Image (tube, rainbow, N blue to C red; front, side):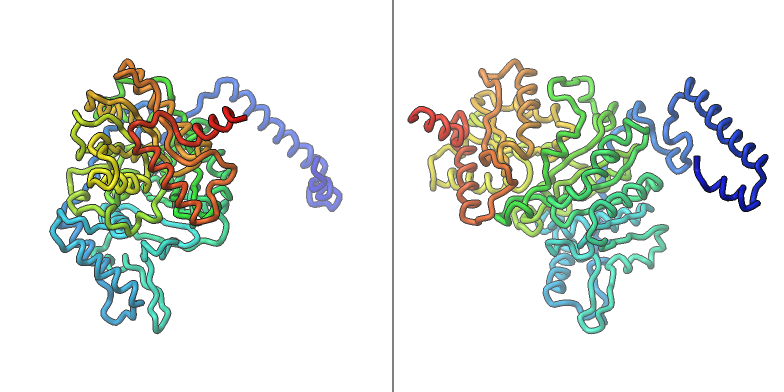
Length: 508
């Protein structure tokens, strides 16, 4: 019905007979393709994309990989990337950071000196040495929004850029790293990285939001392609989406990466525990689901999560709710040994400091609130509060989805005198992971026939709210103090906000 063919015929470019033949050819093509649809069976992506042939189908189990790197290699590569050229005029603050990084990798391997920026840059260097290509795109990725990465530096005299990974050129690695500060468009930048990851499965493709909140500008890419592309079109992707997340009193536009939105897209069941999948060497639970969602509380877990993305035999999107306050937190630092060979990503980190027979309350949490809880528990143990600190164990859900049923259930079994299980979070009750984890904790308790009569978890977090966070620092601190009190009070059976509502109803 287009006017273009008619115009061409009127101008003598084609004859009327040519025009009719063109129409017949098009109709014949459409009819032939329509007939093919009757017997069409979708083919796996690897069958028609040569670059995917070395990866396995979702129905072929792929055993988890160890992702640690030998100590001498970590130190060699770290020394290269953290040693700046002698003629480079570095900013004094950045120069101090690089001296600390150099000291960290040269110190004893069991010292807690590795921060998130050090571990992340070491990860990229090791991947380059393994023969992989790395891409990082986002609005401030060269420096990192919170000044933790510093992958590209600028000479303070000449203003010339310097990539710390240029120091690895002497090794002749087959690929390089690209760190690109993208335009102020989440939608376009994330879409490009997704497309790149589809065509280059052996590239670690990362899109990082400036703040996790800003990912809503690319929600279409997440919903239509990242979360559902594999089930709709057999299109695997190993794209990594980093969403800086953490409640630090910075207000509703700079606090939340919207954990609840991502978890709502996850297709792992809340009410069915596949016990046969717990033998991880024979079956990979992640392969069976559409997304992996993590909130690492240690630099080592970030290191391993990124490395396993390309070292495993399949590809799956990875959503990281990455740290802000934890980036340079002393308590969150890890050792070089935790990156050493023989190590891997830890989906769940139990509290090994607690004495199981004494514990009556298990608190599960994710992210930086763990360190607030630990500080509160330590105060109780030191006598500043009541003496119930020894009765509390605090565990970390490093991987939220697929939910680590196997590790959580095994942890529950360790506490014979357990009386309550708490889910603690920074986010409001109608946000964060509560809606997702609460049902899975209930399923875990049911699997154990409700140990000691515990049927459901207790919520400890902020009250429901239309906004993600308050804009007043004082109010923020009050809310944090309240959620810590709710979590650490072993006699509390519900959260304080519910008690306030009930009290109001009684007084009406």
